[in-house]
Length: 114
Image (cartoon, rainbow, N blue to C red; front, side, top):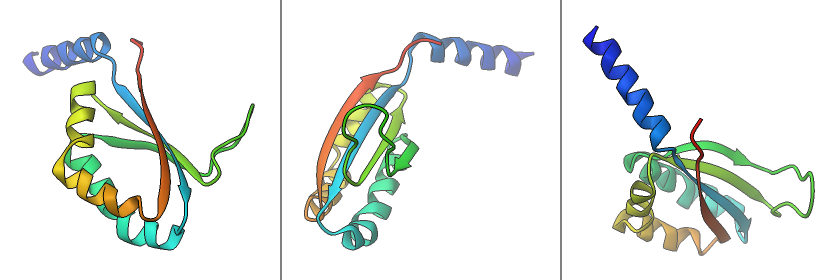
């Protein structure tokens, strides 16, 4: 009973505080180096800071021009958590590597209660 109650409270809390989505678009200058030197470490920093990768890959356009190379969606439980990751020393260090191999466009979008 207590476990069920705790799960219900967590579910209500999650609905009251929707997640934050981080949208990225990357245009590669060197896809191979980006994939080898940047990507595995960047994903590890995302996970270490409580983020999750929801989608990543070549986008399909429905209206307007899609990103040239890749796009994706990451999710965090809060904007504070996202900011902690983005401004962390470990991500800043690997981001500098990634910027050698890609141009970035990033933005965050708040989720909506379900």
